[in-house]
Amino acid sequence: MENKKVIHKHSLAIRWLHWVNFPLLAVMIWSGLLIYYANRVYKLDLGFTTITFFPEWFYDAIGMRRRLAEGMSLHFAFMWLFTINGVIYFLYLIFSKEYKLLFPHRRALKEAWLVLLHDLHIRKGLPPQKKYNAAQRIAYTGVIILGFFMIVTGLAIYKPAQLNWLCATCGGYEAARIEHFVITILFALFFLVHIMQVILAGWKNFSSMITGFETKKIESNDHKRANLEHEKSKE
Amino acid sequence: MTIKEQIWNTKKVRNRTILSFVVFFVMMGLAYCFWKWLYAQPEEHGALKPLRKVLIQNEKIFKPLVSQEHLVKTYPLQKAEKKVRVNGWDGIETPLDANWKLKVVRKTGDTIFITLDDIKKLPKTDIVFDFKCVEGWNQITHWGGVKFSEFAKYYELDNEIQMEYVGMITPDKGYYVGIDMPSAVHPQTILCYEMNGKVLPLNQGYPLRLIIPVKYGVKHIKRIGSIFFSNTKPPDFWAEEGYDYFLGL
Image 1 (cartoon, rainbow over the protein chains, first blue to last red):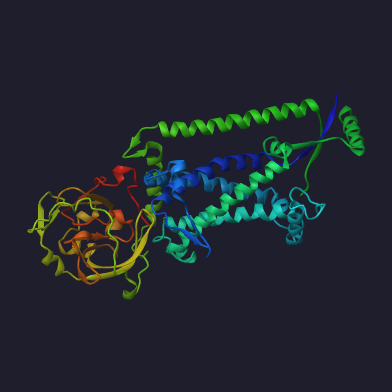
Image 2: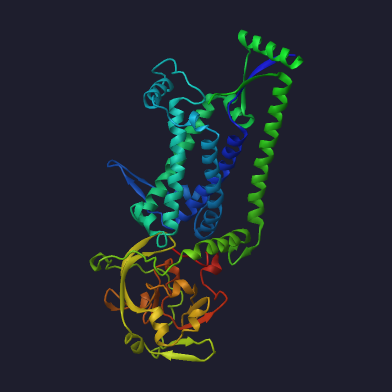
């Protein structure tokens, strides 16, 4: 029978936490938009043009007019699941020591630059990497930090009186609201880049987020190892 | 930490792949079914029943945070907005009775009627705070009136404020709120008759409105007609429309 080399990329816990987070984050962003619609005032003035958050066609396209109460009840129910999943994920990273594969290492900034040049087809070849390259390390760690601030700013907006010290730490109520909103936009941008990268990386990479492993052809020294393991199992 | 590598035969690779994908699609399917199930649930006061249950649980979790020591941030007078936003006309659209008196229903069932002049005789408190609307806007505004706790003490409502809730209704019954007692007797909660140092305008709830900085704006009922006390939740205008009942900040 033919053998294959199996590289275990993602543990069962990581895969579950990742795919549980996906619909939860979607519900949080969706209900957040329903809430935001009630006071849709944020604009970004770039000098030559102004970006309105969001244009009216956007609300029409996804049918989200006047659903504040629904948005709030969804947001304040699913916030628990989103937070719990995030906390478990973080604790898992720390206790399984998997953070060593994920958090940026010392050479991260320099290497991330090389990865960027490579991805833009300016430079050939990538620095050697383990599970993630430096750019991925920075992006994935960044998104964990964003998640943390999402919860902190959310709590500051939710209980600005009882947790007024938290609200003050965020720079006040209005600042906390803007931060919460900006983090959402950053999450959405991360999502877009993430999807693009996953598409570019191909099916095997995507599949490994579901199965946990990627397969490779067996090289000559792998054959030796396979034989050894075979011998061992006979003993 | 290193990445584990193994040699598997093709059959094992195929079986594991199929198993993983089956579990994946089943779980995604279940998530979708859960969402459909959620939206198929009956509503309780305008909110889907499971979500209403969570809102009530949230109230239980966050209510103990309400403390007489946790004060809402206040601002210097000059920070107060001169053009105060008007939002919500329910309960103040009918003409105001010229003989308006505040009706207070005591625990025993008897009622007292209090004129605005009598209320004005009580010690006055001014507050400049950041008024927060459930819609998402906020405005620093200046209000004046008597602390609800001092009002209750003066009119000997000591037994009443031992109860769990206070209810307030406009004279035409067009708007009504229910408030948990710890929030009602919070030192920054006032029965308000002044805005920016002047008589409260009609559209801001003349003659008397509630200012309760530890709650969203919808709880700051305008033109209070009557006040009563209860150990069960008094009816609340927006809580019937799917909003959280507690709405504590």
